[in-house]
Image (cartoon, rainbow, N blue to C red; front, side, top):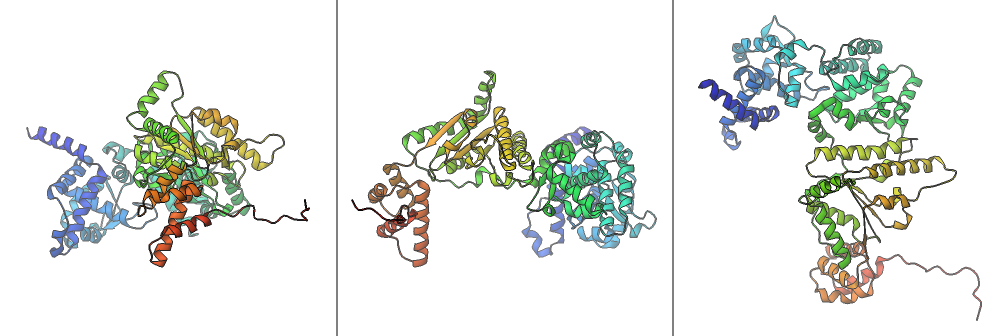
Length: 578
């Protein structure tokens, strides 16, 4: 009966906790212990939750609850320290005692617990003879089990001595020694060549690299990037690495240039993402989505959160705004928004697939400047709870030959990877798309024109097999290449606002006035919604600076200043009399 009860508890805990959840609960308890007695009541801690977390860790690793307390204390000490490479640092009895709010001498009563953890290879020690002075650290396998919430296997922990994580840790140590010139680079190269071949091909990333004929230098860079991804921001400055691993200046430059121009197999095989910067010395690399999946497998999402793209806009971060359009534009946008609602979109894609048609929804919003194209996409994303992946067109145009094509390909690769991870399909937004979707050049082309044509061909090919939601906006629809017209399923024109619509926009932006008061201004000035927003901002600035309530006369004056003066140049030459 007791055994059945134990299994039942274990099952419940597994559903409630992950290893990192349990670590967080135990760490909160440690923090509570370190507070002065009079402040402990201010911290909300749950004794039962703490006991459950201890039991969870104990069950996960086959140790006692008391040992689980020591294990997590050491894990937190190691990973809270600003180190070069995660848990590659020791924790001594004094540090452990301080974490647990104990006197150091009390720790000696538990030496048998630490001995047991060392025997099980859960902990490593630097001194098995002098027990009281030994430093302890968690084995890399156990650290991985905690970080990745993976099952612990005692057989695997004891038997697999050629783990990828151990290889990465030792390579990092060698690189650090080489950077301090206390270690010849030849020792690092020999280590890689001798130990890499012993790595198990059970790791998909090792198996994949084995099939590529890459140099030892490329292996060093790639596996250093893997290690950096696990414990840091995932980016490697190539110049710093090249300074360490190359003695010859010309070899170093050629290595960096091969990466920047895409000649390296690591780039050709889409294993590294390249951030070229303005100069070769700015070159940075990080693991591509493909390499991340090979390296981390099912846990790729855990580390993708560290690499959040600045161009991804969450629906909850979009500020609600009321937009006004002509009746025709309003109806089309409303219908489009309805398609993207999560109640409708999956069913829509299913019907298209059953009919043997493309399931992607590609849409072009076009119209004059300030007609609300971009803001419409934002508001639709907010209402349908979809993320927006905003393409920075300037950033995909590179000075390096062939790099722009890789960058535009990467846009779609990263978007497709995000689609797989998200429950609700995000929107891929090409804002002001005329900068890249313009008519292709023919005849004798220069390098930049060739690159642009190649980028357009990649986009056209990707759109042909697109499975998500792509929206593009443009003010210059006549400049677009005709090949793109067929690729867009919907073409939505947003007209300039009529006087009646402009009157509503003015009234919404300046609620202190009556809507009827804007009738004359709406008729007198032919402004877009964006231009009206500009004028309202200037009126607000004037109110803040002068401390007076704006009047319609001030508004009229600002309206007169909004447009650039045109056709004011005096004619050159003489004017003949009639």
